[in-house]
Image (cartoon, rainbow, N blue to C red; front, side, top):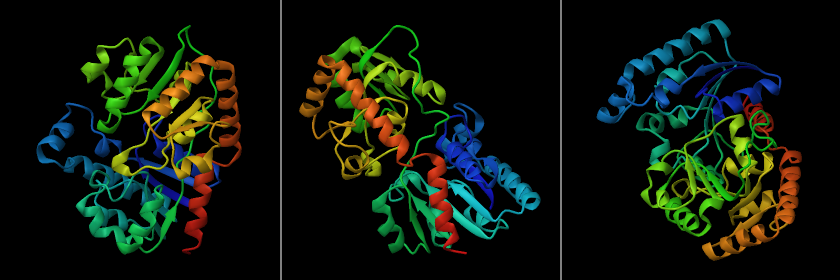
Length: 337
């Protein structure tokens, strides 16, 4: 297939990984980067406009659409594939010459933060809507979507693989991800307990004063190959879910074990399906159980390393790469043709 792929193309983005997955699966792929619309540079005119007008800068949207239309005229795609393109003009996307139109959302499409009024107005016009949230399947059908596909999140071997440690610092527990209200209290409490044995990296954490008052190491986000290098410094890697998305698994559910890290995550049915508790990962239901796991890891580092190795073997042999997801999506597309 010739796939015109519209999505955020920055290094380490899930959209870039999925586009590469389609290419690895044998398809001809042209990528149009939507990052200038989705994530305008902080303090740039489009960023200021988005904060004042509460919508994306129309001149940036126009520029991306012009690029899409030029590419479509030259490439003549079989599939227009839009990766969470809710801030673009939906009618113009759907009027782009192609045989099949697919929209992919990595997040909960019932969460207002992940949709737009324009997207909702045209959602039923897409030939296929793909979601990584199992609970969205029924909801999308009830909203009138023509066809719904479910695929899990994935990992990218280009970024997520066992890596050598950098420097001499080791941490008992760590978390890499965005600062969110539903994560903040738990991580602050852990930082008070484990202090210098804890690492927290991601957007927003350095602005939490309670964390600065602890001995924990707090730093900014990490992407691409650097992610796996940081995982290598951590014994127990926390896999925290996003309650606003009603997550039962997330990208980290695959990325942590694929990078060779010990998966320590919230107990859900999907996590239990992916990895065996106490054999290939550790699952917990509350703070007390999490503390018990971390203290066990501190007392038994060799056994913790063996469980991490078992988790790595399970995830990397069960077909959870982006190329595997690309093949699943192509199968769903082929049922529409």
